[in-house]
Length: 242
Length: 283
Image (cartoon, rainbow over all chains, first blue to last red; front, side, top):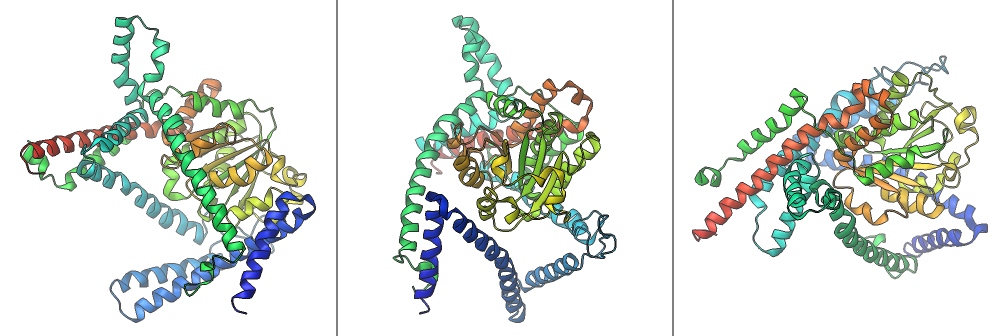
């Protein structure tokens, strides 16, 4: 029973979504199912939060290595949650001034806005910005022309790195002018070999072809896996014992 | 010299990268932009729409990608306002709500005649990822009964007659991952034939190229494309030249150029060391 009911629910809902796409009469059924999905997704945020608290509380309680970080995570989690839910520092909305909690929780000057603006935003930006430093270090140590494949990758990287800045125009200008004057070719005809244009060509051709092939392969895999799930052949989503 | 680079402490590389980024920012170093055909095509898609067209701008990114995506987001907002299009802001990312507020600040500061609820609306965030798209393509109010400030959509002039997003003339998605451009293409643009353009991070652009041109009209990839879009916008609307905030992307291209040159230099030096070692039989 524990296995059969979830299987029936999954199969029914899955087939309803598929049918609703092909039969206009059943379109509203699919719409309802999608609304259930969105409600479940919203509830999943609560489950995710609960799981996060459980994991980190256990780590702090067991004094496992790095438990201090877990404590900071819990403090940050509960502080943000309390400030967000209480709408600390948020003034009532202009439309509903009589209702104390009517203001937007992200209202400028409010507690949640303050956390976002002065903690989350700089921290997230800093984490992403650090990539520039590690990419530079990794490029120096790991990007070696060891074999033909690596040379192709290296060459493409150079085209893209140059092409994504004005350096691409500067670097290709002199050689293209030389070719134009020496061979008497029209400058317009050589435009596509300018590095900033050439990197676009790489994206439009080799990149698009490769990605399209991968995407078609993935789509076929997803279709067959979905069918296996809907028919109950693949039950791995029910848990590890399945 | 090679010996120095062979044992180069990576902290020197970090310091070099710091200067490569900081000096262009501090000196305001910028370079001219020559917009690519792709950027011009994206611009024309917005520009060719008749005045007052409905445009859905989905801001699906968070502060981590703000540096890369904010300039194109701002440029799209300015362009839509200059063309007097109706703008519907939406996001599937909880961290993106303040990004929409930034766009609204632009409209309030630079386009005082643009009125909230009449010319633009902020629908805000809704949980459910691509599930939200699947619902609002048929019935907007099944997911969004209120705008971000809690006003009922029936009470807002711009949304009163909007049943679903099939009524949009264009979807503009600024995306840093999932859910993002791919989901908007798969669940809204392609099945219902809604024209769509996308702006993404540098790493997010390559997987979207297979969708061009049938499912996706065009794409702006990273800060370079944003700077080029700003250039086309300035050429088409010269009155914007007096607005220093309209060159946000171009101001960031100086750092990108020097940073890229440093990385190229490091790769070259790294390979010189590698071939030197190979010659000496150390590799």
